[in-house]
Image (tube, rainbow, N blue to C red; front, side, top):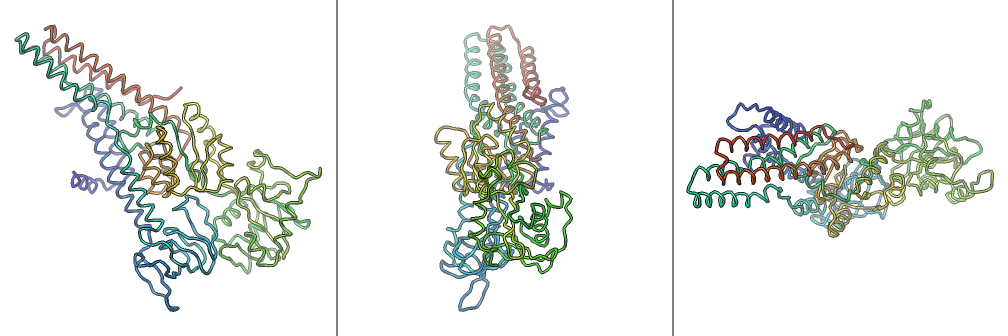
Length: 604
């Protein structure tokens, strides 16, 4: 079977997502042809849909293995080891605990360790899922698989080989994959009893009546085609419906599992938010410069910056039509910020350490911000409405107010004096709030699992009416929380987009990945991919899965009832084999017709 799957993979070299869509289109077409009674082959066309449903599942398993291989490739293959003052490049697996390593800008961190010299910014998305790099300096820990972005540094290896973070991630994905058992279809669970009942009834009828024609009729009417079609036709119709709403269902039983889900765990960045920082406030704490000046001069200084925060400030400024002057004597200081001359003024934009290094007294800044009062003499408080307004220029406020709401603050100094700050925050997807409210109405509990810090997580959760929040989550933490829910007999659906979400996507009963912004590894780990990243359709998918299960149960009840009535009539001799065959075919047509209603179903 593995060889067959391999040959099919080579045959369908059109790409994973397109491959799935191709199979789904063929399967849907087969169901329609079966419904219309068109069959160029000596068998019912609906059997093509049944076979392809299993094939799609086999290909999904193959891609899951490929996803783990991609995760392995994230690990740097070599490391720069410093011994006796000389640098040498060795295979990463030969690094020993205690070795001194050098990591240059743009390189991946080969093993876990602690920085002993230098400062930089490290992209930790592979571990935390957060898009913004984290400033690192002497004494800070770095993890294997993360990417050094700006400054070179030296580190002391602390965890190597199988103990490193990226290797633990790989083991988590593998263990999570093995831990999610496949659900056996309802029809499969009944199949054994159906065969036993049919054979027993036919044998007894022949022995008692002595008429073999009655026994043959029983076998004809009890051939469970309608029952066999009950589940796959409903699943394929529901998959067709989901595809029209932007979902690519990659495992046949994913919707069956989704129908029983009562907890949905969301990743934050890239799932509920856009994952890109946006300026929410520009505040002046200087009598010489107003809010517009702080915003403009900071953007001027950041024009040549490669840091995501600097790029966000420049981008937001330009979108508002603000004309920026050129920047001279530009310097980017890794782990601190930027320094430049613009409009004849020396501008610093970065963290408090940058200002301190240039002689701007941090204590004075903190005291001045803390003492800032409005005209009534009371501290200026920010409401959630004003905080998330599109107005970028806020009245004077304490940066702590923004930090407590999950913002990242860039401090600005002009000509050696503290002048103000720029507050940036991730932005919510417009449809996220309505989507969470709709899920609540369906009786599904929403939970936020994020690698972001607690302030940012709680701010987003309060906006979305999510009551349960878990912040600072590493991949193993997300697995732990999902395991906790499962031990409480709760069915969990995980929705994420990053590499760090892959283990949780595997462990949850249903994993849904963002197909547009999501990483290939996350998509490979998921059961369902949201192709267009429109999370507003998620409540429809949940409701559709429940409706699909209702349709399956109706199909099975109808087919079983029809079969038992037909067998009674066959036993009494009322039905002959020809009439029995017509009854049998009529049952199959009615089941397919009922399933077809799912193609255009939408919750009212």
